[in-house]
Image 1: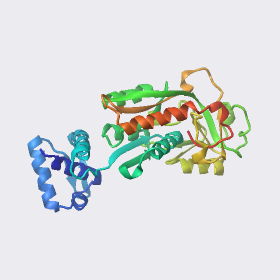
Image 2: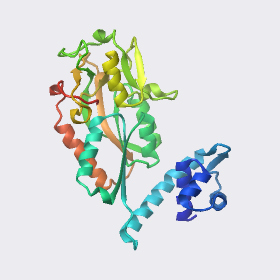
Image 3: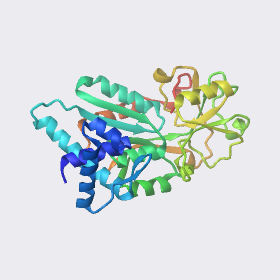
Length: 317
C-alpha cells in the first residue's frame, strides 16, 4: 500500500467516477483501475462498488477512506513543512448547521490570515452531513446543537463515529420572523399565537431526520410547515408568507441585514426549550492552529452577543 494509492482512492471517492478521477490525476483510466484492484487485493476488501453510473464506496470502503484521509493529510502536512517546494497550502474546513454566527466567526478568522497561504472552506449543511463531514475528515470542525429532545439520538451517532461534542453556549428559544410580521413588535410570543402562520424548517431528508431538525421545540405540532434548504430561501419565505422559525437568538445582522426580528419564545419551564450549541471533532484529535483560532473567534462573538438586545437586528441563528 502506497501513499499514491491512498491518494488515488481518495480522489475516486470524491469524484464518484474512475474516468473523472483519472482526468484529475492525469493518468490513464486503465492504470487507475489497475492500481485500485491491486490495493483491494492487498487489503483483502472491496473499496468501491463499480456500476454503469460510476463508483460508490462499500461499507469497508467508507471506513478505509476515513483512515486514508487521516494518513494522507498527515503526509501533506509533512510535505508542506519539509518538502523541497514548500508550496502546499494548509487546509481548514468547517461544516455547520445554518448559523450565521458560525459564518461570521469564519470571516473574522480568515481576516487574520494570509489567505494566499491557505485553502479555506465553510459549508452550511444538513445535520447528518455535519456529522459525516467530521467523521470522514472532510471538515476538521462541525457546528451543531443538542437539546433534551435530540441529545440521545445525536450522541449515539457521535459516539458510534468516535466524535466528541464540546459545548460553547446555552440558549433559550427565540421566534425569528420578518419585521413586517403581525407579531414583530411583541416583547415575547407564545406558541398559540403562531398557530396561524407557517413554520419554516430546514430540510433534513432521510428516515431518521426527525431527530436531526435544526429548529428547537420539535415536539410541537405545527399547523403549517414549509421546508427549505438554505437561509436565503427561509428569509424570503418569512417576507412572502409571514413565516417564522425557532432559533437560538444569536443572530448576525451584518450578514443578513436588518429586516428581521428575534423575539423570545415564552418559556414553558422545560429543558426542551434550551439549545446547547457546540462544536464537534474526532476523538483524540489535536486541533490545528486554524481550528483553535476559529473557535476563539466563535467564543468572542458569542460572548459579545446578547440575545435579549437584538430584536432590532437581522440574521438567522
